[in-house]
Structures are given as C-alpha cells and as structure tokens.
Length: 331
Length: 128
Image (cartoon, rainbow over all chains, first blue to last red; front, side, top):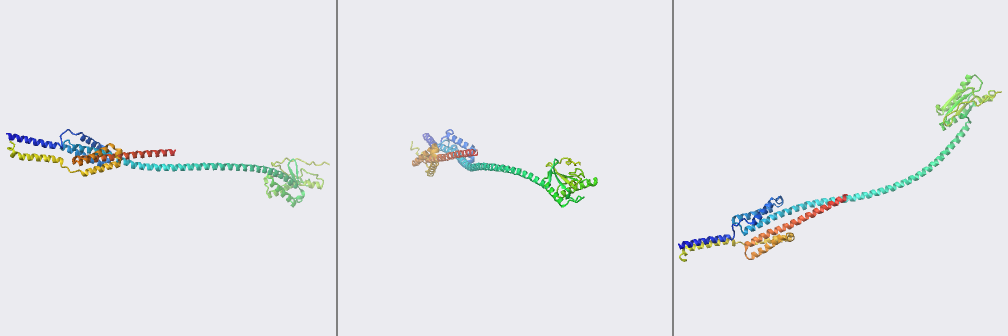
C-alpha cells in the first residue's frame, strides 16, 4: 500500500517535471499579439499590387517567415521563438513594402531622367530657335534700315532728276518756241519763194501761163519745179489743204476756155498727187475766162489772165470763198 | 522503507532522469550561430553604408542593439538567444538599409521632377 502510494507520487513528479521541462519552450497562451501583427503586415504587403509587382521575392520571404511563425505556434503555442519568428516576419513584410517603394522610385528615376533629357533638349532647341529668331529680327531691322536709306537716296536722286527734267522741259519749251518761230519764218520764206501772195482767202500761189505749153495742159519744166516746191511745202505742213483754180483769157469760146482752165488745174493736181500728196487735200475748179486779173485788151494782160491759182488754206484747212479782186478797168 | 522500494524504484528513477535530460537537451544543445551573427554584422554594415543611421534611425538602432546583444549572448554561450538576436538584427538592418535607399531614391525623383518643371517653365518663357 505504502509502496504503491510511493510509486504514484513518483510518477506524478515525473510527469510534472516533464511538463515543466517542456513549458520552458512553449505555453498554451492565447494567440500572441506579435503573431497577429505579423499576419496583418504580411496581408497588407500581399494585397499591395505594387509589392506583388516590384518585390515579389521579398514578399515570398515574408510569407515564408510568417508561415514558420504560424507553424511553430501551432506546434508549441506561444513562445519566445514564436514571437521572434513573428518579429522577423513583420520586418520582412516591411522590407517587401520598402523594396517595392525603392524599385518604383528607381523606375521613376529612369523615366524622369529620360523625360529630363528630352525636355533639356527641347529647352536647348527652343534657346537655339530663340537665338535664330533674334538674329533674324536683327537682320530684318538692318534690312529695313538699309531699305529706308536706299529709299531716301532714291528719292533724293528722283528729286534731282525731277529738277533736271524740269530744266530740260523748260529748255525744250524754249526750243519748241524757237522751232515754232523758225518754222513760221521758214513758211514765210518758202511761200515767198513760191511767189505767194497773202489774201483774204489764204495764201495764193499763181502759176503763170509760161509754165504751160501753149493751148495745152502740159506743165513745162519750170511749172514742174514750181509744183515740186509746192508738194514739198504740203508735206511740211500736212494740216493745210489746197484749192487749185484754173483761168483763161477771153480769146476763144467759153466752153473751150472752161475745159482748158479745168484741165490745167487738174494737171497741177495730178502732178501734186504724183509727188505723194493725198488727193483729198486738193480741190480743183475751172473758171474759164472769169475773174481776170488784168485787161484782156493787151497781150500782156491776156497772158496774166491765163493762169492757175493755188490757194493754200490756213492751218485749220479752211479756204475762204472766191470774190473778184480785180475789177476790169472800164475804158 | 526507502530501501524496500529500491529494487522496484531504481528503473523508474532512471526513466525519469532520462526524460528530464531529453527534455532539457531540446533547449540547451543548440550549436553556436556563428554564421547568423556574421550575416547580421554584414547587414548592419550595409545599413550604415546605405545611410540607415540618417534615414531610418529607429530601426537602425534596433539592429545595432540586437547585434550587440547577440554578441553578448554568444559570449555567454546562450546560443538560442544569440541566434534570435542575430536574425532580428539582420532583418532590422535590411529594413533600415532599404528604407534609406528608397527615401533617397524618392527624393531624387522629386528633385528630377522639380528640375523638369523648371525646364518646362523656361521653355514656356522662351517661347513667349
């Protein structure tokens, strides 16, 4: 009985000792805070997409560390080792978070560096463009200044030229005036050479009987010369027109004299047209024995009456009407 | 009475002692964590070079303290404690180092972005 009791006591002691020995390593407390902290930290890391993207290896380490802590806790309950493993797991979760931050920042540095280089290039380009623009502006200003100077010079030259032209104009007007005077003088001379007489109707040139063959309308060389001079004069003064009028003496019948006077006037016209004068400028009339300029009683008077008168118009081409200038003296 | 029980008690006593010895051996016969302490030491050195004392002073101090305690535990032949201190020193040091590096990198990003902004402003001004 006593021996049996002793054995029971001894057995109890042995179990107690074994439990005490084991309890040095583990106790069955409620789930420790450290393990819970680690679980939360690892879960946070795991649910962070940046951690899974940038720090997958570190995240796996944290998960593994947490599983070790959890396994140990399940086997032993709370212990220094479980708390230690939980601490390591929580640190590893923090490391995973921080590594993902680091790698993301490094990625940003790469991108930002590229961006900075791009922008820097852009800045340099803008600077260069700006410089070019400034140079162009300066060039433009220089051009404008130069153009203005050139314009001023050109205007000065133009003014000089204008002055010279005015002077020349003045000279030219003087010259024209002189030329007009000279021409008037020349006309005078030429008309004098043609033995012209100024009358109310215009200037009259008389081609006398001796310039024609007797009883004929053929011009003698002297008459031809006179016609040539007349043609020359008409060419010189294109505004003037002619009235060519033929006359005879009173010898012979009227119709003969009429025809002869017309033919002689026409002969002069033909000669002038041959010399290049437009026929439209020349009017021809035969007056027969009308409008004698002298008495038909004497041979000299009759010879003077046998004539062709060329009336030269004024500068407007007008010729006045014929009026008798000679009154046959009544004896 | 004690002697009377000697014959039947002796094997039981041997069993009890053996059980106790086995139970204690589970905790006590741990090899010295020399390698782990070396790893922790290297991690702390890396944290220093990464700027841990400046950028993550709390965690870095924890690492340093645990390394010191680990060394002390090694000297006292308390190898389990030494291993735990060394392991915790290692992860603390790693956290301090990576925190320092990440802080510096994020600061660099901010500076770069500031510089880019300034350049863009310059361009905008030059364009006007």
